[in-house]
Length: 74
Ligand code: FES
Image (cartoon, rainbow, N blue to C red):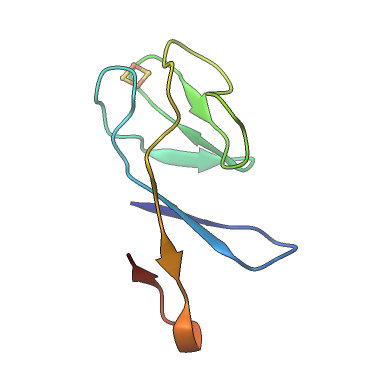
């Protein structure tokens, strides 16, 4: 899973690392976007659809809570 933390809110968004295009493991975060190395798709945490590429769905997001600064998945 990738955890992207928004600088303004300090809240954490957690995403599964499986690309929704063809199942590769997304491997890098650059400029606030999650990148898939297989076909170059790009995913942004706040976007309503993939930013670039062949995927039609966003990365699967996991609900999280941060009681006392510890990240807990739901
Ligand atoms: S599997 Fe990720 S872009 Fe194709």
